[in-house]
Amino acid sequence: MASKTKNKILVLYDTATGNTGKMARLVAEGAGRVPGTVVRVRSIAKAKPADVFWCDGLAVGSPTNMGLLSWRMKRFWDETMGPHWMRLDGKIACAFSSAGGWGGGIELACQSLLTVLINFGFLVFGVTDYAGKMMTLHYGAVTAREPRSEDSREACRILGRRLAEWTAVFAHGRQKQHPSRRLAQRMGPG
Image (cartoon, rainbow, N blue to C red; front, side, top):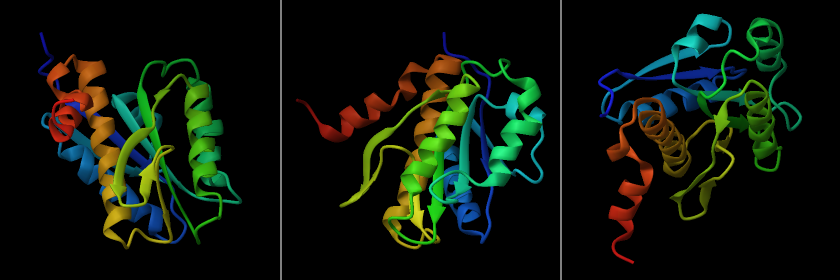
């Protein structure tokens, strides 16, 4: 029997210029499109361990800093969450990042975020959907500067929706919200 408990998604982000913050709001918008989901958006400056414990699914966003996550995001996981290591196993997570331009290591920054999450016991995922003709999000949603194009905005929404779908399925037993059902309907018989 499917759970009636609300699906809880936390979008946790760091932003230097506001671009990753804009992505965070789009990720939250996508997650909020999944029925039975409540979304909390927190900057790392205001986030507390209780926020991370509260959620079923976590989307983590960081500006790209020399191809890696930002030092503020790393400090949050090292110092704020470090004492809680081994207490987050099994939560579901994904990543998103922005950089000053294409080729600046945005996907590497997502991978570094995913590496931190894996070390805390999160189950992480990639997304096979295309957000546009040439916009994928295998490692997470990425954009150069702010998410201006509809493709980059849609990538953020897709990431949030997929996170909420996975947590609905795995944390609450809502098999009808499994992403493959929606994808199968879109792709048709075959």
